[in-house]
Length: 232
Image (cartoon, rainbow, N blue to C red; front, side, top):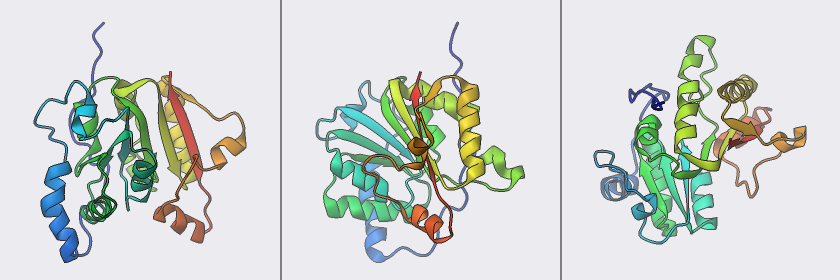
């Protein structure tokens, strides 16, 4: 039976695309560094994604909606032999990340500045070791829940691109989205939740750097859940 791949249509899981005007250095980075690091989805993905990076990488990791880029930069620094693909449609966040990539001199980061589903449909099957979806837009109103990134269609995208035993990590401070994700992963059937006890999902991921969204949640009195799923 031939596997049916999800539709390529853009589902608009994100909101606004741009905030305040960029500083001069950020604008320069967007003009020069973004074209150099942006994935070219008009060309077929290479048979080995390691070819996307100038230095040898042994693993591939995808972060969807990297926000301020704190987590992506931290992971890229501590794992120089892992190639990172960061997706973020918000212009100001992309500009901030590119500035950090340039300052630190990271050579294991590639980016995309539009809908993550486009990247997921472009990636080869079984090519990614780890997917991070951290503090995604919760779309708190029930009528907007269909815009949440976690869905059966997107979980099937995750399942297709993850290697056997690959990980999907999700973090949120919104209880309804945490429960939503647990239920969707359970219903999909292709992901095994790795928690054995409550402390497993209440404890941040190993070497967790924190994010500005998480700090905001703490200030507003909300705790977070950290869910890890393994591709079955």
